[in-house]
Image 1: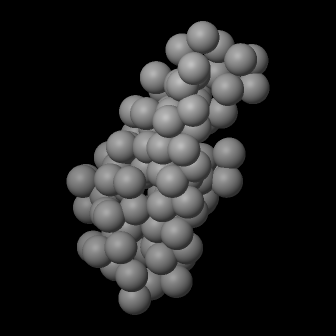
Image 2 (image 1 turned 180 degrees about the vertical axis):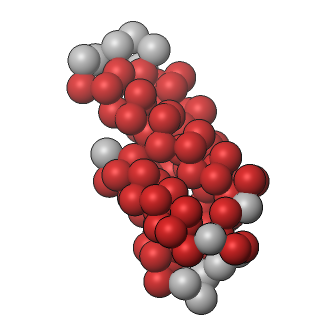
Length: 100
């Protein structure tokens, strides 16, 4: 949920900053990550039988979002979002590997 929240806040921040912060690829990565991290958290909390598969996909999307945000690593907000997305990707990879 931290990654979801960070992506939502970062989208708002990017829109406020304008310019290079409103890059369509960046905004797409943030939107995708925000959506999938929320969905993955929901599925995990309700113990969905598909949660592990969702975690695998979530890890990929969160890692891509972290890469996109690191393109502006000189910006503290972007770096913070990248760090949270990277941590999310690592947690989701670990969860997906626990598949029974």
